[in-house]
Length: 370
Ligand SMILES: Cc1cc2nc3c(=O)[nH]c(=O)nc-3n(C[C@H](O)[C@H](O)[C@H](O)COP(=O)(O)O)c2cc1C
Image (cartoon, rainbow, N blue to C red; front, side):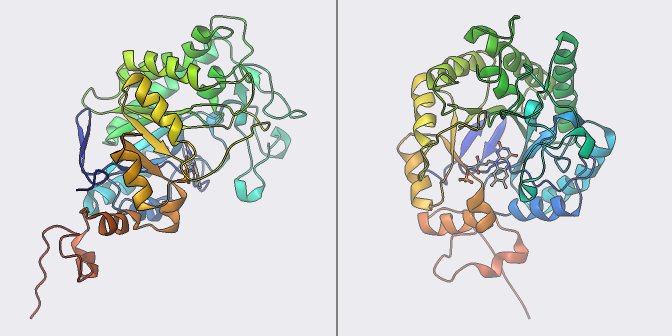
C-alpha cells in the first residue's frame, strides 16, 4: 500500500493523497486579474493527480505584487476573473483548490524572471515598495518605505479581505506565504527587519506581525476549511532566520491552529548559500514535524515517485508539494500512482488512456461503444 496515495484530513478537507501542486507564480496577470493563461494552467494542473492544487502567490494589495504580472485578489475585478476558472476546475476535477495569499514587501516591483527579475524603479513603470524597515533587498537598490502602524493595519486588513474573497470563491484552503524573502518572512528575519518597535528586535517581536496576519486570516476564513502557512526554515545566511527560530514560530502558529506548515527555505538575502540537492529541504520539514507534531509538507527537488513515497512513508513529512516536476510532467500524479500502486481520479474523457497493465489506476471505469 502506498502511503503517498493514502488519504489525509486537513481540518474539514479530506484529501485522497498526499500530493500538492506547489504555488507557482505565472507573471501573466493584468492588473492582478487572471486570464486565459491562468485558465489553461490551473485547469491543466488540476488534473495532475495531486489531491490539491495551490494557486500561485496571490497579492492581497497591488503594491504587494512581486511583478506587474502577479495575480491579485484585492478587488471585485480580481475576484470575478478567478470565478470561471474555479468553476471549470470544479466541473472537471476532484482536486481541492488552495490559494497562497501573499505580499512581496521589499521584493515588490520586480521584473518578471524572464526579463531578469530585477527591481523596476517607479520611473520605469514600477512602484515604491514597502517593507518592515528601509533596508533594500540588495545593496545599492532603492530602499523600501518602512511600514508605520497604519500601514501594518492596512496590510493585515488586506489579507483579511482577500481571505473573505477566497471564501466567496469557494476555495478549499489557504496558504499564507511567509517564505522566500517576501513580506511576512521579512518581518521574521533580522536581515530585513531592523525595527525598534514591538515588531522588531527579539524573536517574539519579529514573529508578532506574521502571527497577527495568520490569526486574522484564520478568523476570516470558514472554520471548517484549513489554513496552512509556508515558511522559509532558514535564510542560509549566518545571523539570519534559522531552524530553531522556525520551530519556535511553528509552536506559536500551532497555538493559532495552523493546519499545515509547508517547509521551504531562503529568499531573504542575495548572500544566501544554499546546499542544493534532491529533497534538500526535507530535513527541515522533518525537524519541524519531529519537534512540534504539526502536519508538514516537504518541498524542493522532489521529482521521483519513490522519493516522494519514502518521504511520507518514513514520517519525514505528511505531504509533499511539487512545483517544477509538475510543469515538466503535468500528469505526474498519474505516473506516480502507476508506479506505486495508487489510484487517481481522472475525468471520463481521458479514461481510455489507462494502461492495459494498470486496470485499477483510474478506479472503476466503464467504456462502451456500439
Ligand atoms: C515557476 C515557479 C513559480 C513559483 N512561484 C512560487 C509562488 O508563487 N509561491 C511560492 O511559495 N513558491 C513559488 N515557487 C517555488 C515552488 O513553489 C517550490 O517551492 C520550488 O520550486 C521548489 O520545488 P520544486 O523543486 O518542486 O520546483 C515557484 C517556483 C517556480 C518554478
